[in-house]
Image (tube, rainbow, N blue to C red; front, side, top):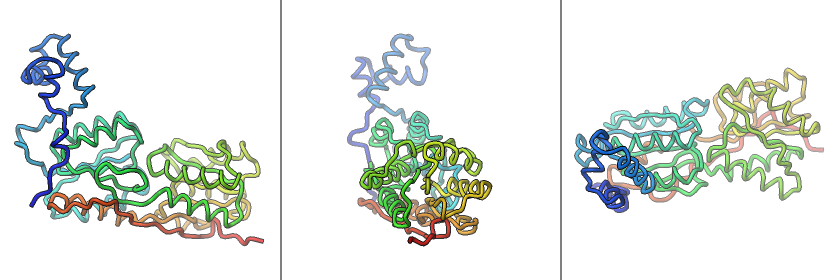
Length: 343
C-alpha cells in the first residue's frame, strides 16, 4: 500500500489564492499562464497573494494527472566540493534500476536560489526531494513543509527535520574534534570555514561552546573564506588568523580541503606541524591520509550516506517510511597533523 502523500492536507491551492483576491480560480490561472488576459493591476494583486500564501503552481499537473513523476530532486550547496562525489556515487548505485531519475542542482549557498529550485522541482510533481548542506532560512523551511512529496534532509541530523533525516550529528562531531585538540594541549585555536551551511553551523556552535567553557574562545579567531578554490587559500587563512593571535597553536577547519590548504602553507612557511601548529579537518576525503603530514580529521561515511539516503526515499514510495532520524555516526581519525606528545 502506498504511503500517504505529504502536504495534501495543508497545501495552498489555486482556489485559496482566488478566495484571497476575490476572483475566480480561472482568473488566477489566466494571470499565471496568460497574463495578457488580465490587467496589470489585477495580476500584481494575484502575485502578491501568491507570495503571501506561499502557493506553488503545479506547472506539470495536466501531464501528470495527480500522480508522482519518476523524478528525485537532489539539492545541495556542495555539488562542487570534494566531499560530494562519494555521496553522489552512493545515490546513483542505489537508484540504478529503480525506475527513478535523479536530478542534481547546486543551490550556491543562496536561500533565494533554493526557493526557486524547490518550486521548479515541485512543479514536476517529483517522487521525492533530497536536500543537504543548505542555508538555515525560515522561508526554505516553510516551503519544504508544503512539499507535495517526501522530503529527506541528508548530511546533518542535529538540525530539526521537516519530514525525514539521515546523516551525522555534526554538533557532536564538532565537540569530538575540539575535545581532541584540547586533549593534545592546544589552547589558542582558530576555526575556518567556507560559507555557513547547516553542518558547518552545527560544528561551529560546538567549537564556540566548548572553548567558551574553557575560557579560551576568541570570536576573532573564527573566519570564513571564499572556498571556490579551497586549496589556494592556505596563505589567506594563516595570514588572517596569525594577525589576530601570533601565538595561534591550532586550526580546526570545517572541511578537509581547507585543512590541507593550511598544511601546504605551513610547509611553505616552515611551520612545524603538529608541534607549532595542530591542524584538524572534517570528512576524511580520499587524500587526507596521504598528504604530509597526514591529516587528522573526523571521518564521515560519505558513500553510505548517499546510498542510504536514496534507499530511504525509495522505501517511502513503496509505502515504508522511516520516521526517526537515521544517525550514521562518525569517527575521529588521529593522524600526524595533531599527533604530538604532551609533557
